[in-house]
Image 1 (spheres, rainbow, N blue to C red):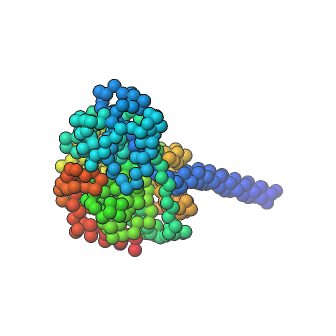
Image 2: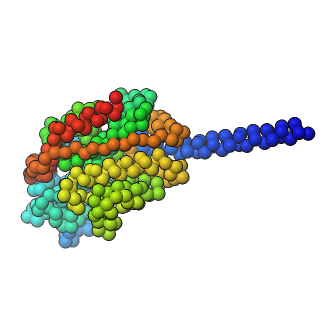
Length: 422
């Protein structure tokens, strides 16, 4: 009888173990399938999108393209690829049953001025350039002085990369690009966040190197001419990567692009994050941040990462705050919060982020993190330089504010990147 009881107990325990294994396997399979569906979306970007829009003066009576048939349309040729401009001119021709009257200008500033001085009553503008125009002294009026009446999206196929490794390397460098748009991730836009993450999976070390958006850099996309780093994003993520590789003398293995929509929704899906602020400051209608740790939701984290006017060293402090947000996200993702909010997290980044890291490599990283509970050692650094006003490739016609890279600062970042991945 005693042996029978023991045998029954063993059978019961074995049954509990089997059930437990089955539940664990089911839970893991659930997470894996949810992750796999999302990865198929964010790791297979097929197109990049350029958005051209037609603007009129804010007080202009035109409400639609049909109302502008007798207008002269101003434009300037800002990119080597003229297909988007030609496409919108053909659209206008189709609407009017005749080719529109046009006036070509040498730069975006002359184009903007033409609305006030004539002869143009409408302008065709690449949406990616507008924020830079508005930031230029004397052209702040554009933000409220122009009104959009129509847009056209032109999509280009994205060239796939064939030299990516098949297996997850022990160390690698990821370019994290935060673009200043909401909605779909395929739109080409300025890259306001530019962070290199040197990752070592064996030592669980990450070195984050931030490059201020106004760094004066060059890229093959600008034919060797200098421009702000943020403007490189207008020409595609490849232009930004090329500029940073030249700047730091490194090879960037992967990229991750995320826009404001994905950023806000990701942090909300994580249940918020805790960020450290070096200063007490306020962002109107958003939050009062205290010196020290602050619990923030997605919108508050975005405001924290974008603010620069509250600080004497503006862009540098903003870059530090951006890295602090990245550090806080990594910390939260390495915690049990990733399991509690897994589906919400996957939904948040779906459609609002893209990467060229192969799907199987991301899966391998995620599985190891879930099973091994890695604790990452994260260090940060922001490259420095000197302020200047110089011409830029993308917005010719005016000298814009830029930062001239300091070679000693770049060398410090290079050494730390190499030490992390070696």
